[in-house]
Length: 432
Image 1 (spheres, rainbow, N blue to C red):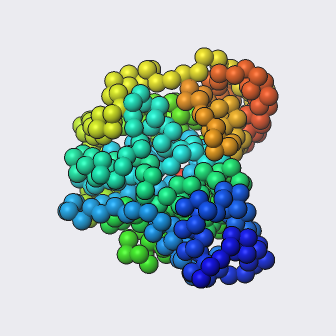
Image 2: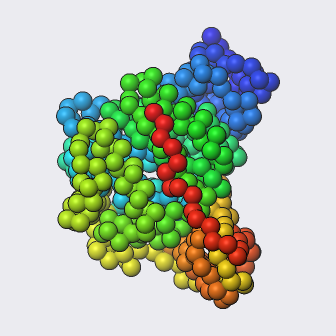
């Protein structure tokens, strides 16, 4: 059948249902360029407002998956397991997690994305390493995976190209937090990897795209269902994003914190979540040992060496891993200090993520170029004691006018009260 983009947009705008044939036509036409970005932006907003039913979601995910090549690693006998996060502030977990799990014998073909909205992107962080190349074609992707047991890359031009285009468009059109668009985007990429298993880190809280626990549950169940329907064992952990993960927000400084975690010197929350997700990946792969095995790989240095191995394989400068001070650092610094004494009762991840983005660490438009040296170091988080004048955060930036414009947003992130509060549990639920 023949369709037009306008009639399909109007159908979904008015709460109608798109047929499998209509969805296939739309995704094919968008990939080919005959449906424009502005038309797909309108469709994304219609989906954001009216959602998909179960059949539409399955058809949309399938059309995305079939828009290009898929990967085939049947010749690799070891279990192939990946992890994906729905995005959060300070969420650099993929960087220490992938080499750690790979050092245990799991094959990790990790395909990541760039920053969306106020959240950072794994690829942007990896590319703060000089020379590190994430744009691998499928053949090179497979060669490195067979050689090292791990790849840290983005989508190639030919792998799920519809999602590659739509991913950036969602960021610039205010439709990032749509459950159908999130789940189909993530799962189409992951199903293209030829996985045996997948672990999902579904964030909830102020710094997540899903602010409520119920919305996070819905997203987790949706993605787990897509995985099961396609024969990939999928487990989701719902994790807290009411405050940033770790002490660093920004690209180069999150890379430095990731390296510290692989040395066994990372913040407790980064280490604990890395271990929790790693344990599930080992479980899916059928490897015994759990956290004890993971900790032994950090203590022995094998996890760090695995990271060096994949960095070298992807043309990165491994000297940065030995000396993270070589990573980019913005020239200007400022501090945020406490006016009152007491305890931190809120450390708002959204306000911190938005400030970092507006200072240059993220993108507000798909064509924006990030500044890898922009970053925020957190000195006080939930439950910490604060005296008047204590430094809450140190900020690195390149453009003083941007800091002057957005500094009050960052200052608003901390609430100081008289009673100590405890941070929420880092891992809230498991869904499979």
